[in-house]
Amino acid sequence: TVGLKTRVIGSRIVYFDTIGSTNDKGKELAANGAPEGLVIVAEEQTTGRGRLGRTWSSPKGRGIWMSVILRPEINPMDAPKLTLLTAVALARTFDSYPGIQPGIKWPNDVFIKGKKIAGVLTEMNAELERINYVVVGIGVNVNTSRAELPPEIENIATSLYIETGKSWSRKDFLTKLLEELEALYLSFKMGEYAAVVEEWKKYSVTLNKKIKVTSPGVALEGTAVDLDDDGALIVRTRDGSLKRVVAGEITFASR
Ligand code: BTN
Image (cartoon, rainbow, N blue to C red):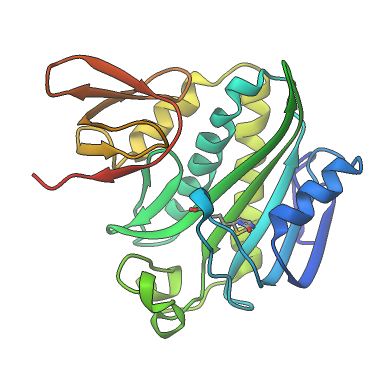
């Protein structure tokens, strides 16, 4: 055990030395009835996945590669809220490190000084109005050195080690992260989501920036002006109209 103070998240932790993807394992276990709060952690992933079909580099012993099974009684349409909530838990955790100032890029990338340090991949299994399970996958570059970053992300990714010049305990990071996740998830379940949105805004590096939305089937350019109560991004386009974006990906436009 990691000396956790949590009651739900991490009530059971399954540990793997090496695995394809903790999200795939999470979906498999969830489909077989694994309880809410079960966490899957791996030292190494051989086929780690990112959002939008990307790969996620997960070198052995260097980061936190984990997934959490949740079974919230919410409408599937509200599932993106869990992703924003996870980004806030990550930001709070990074915030507790000296000299580290995390920023969240919508919806759920965590950045330090313009470089990505952590990401969230949420996958769900739902019937019409009912969520069966959600697997929240979290990848955090903790002790990855610059030389260990794949060349294609060398200039856009970072780690706690790269930022601070020191190695950090992955166990301490995981403990803090699970505690923050539990606190936020329990208040979410009690209907206190507005505070999460406010905190997300506090960490946001997206608001007031010129952006391009590149979600499948959406082509939009404008200024990100707000995050609404459901976690959707509000974009003001050139003609002044406001558009609501619920999913996808943004890039920062050069001015
Ligand atoms: C992204 O930013 O594109 C999301 C990255 C998510 C990576 C994590 S690592 C643990 C879990 N298992 C996976 O295969 N992916 C997620």
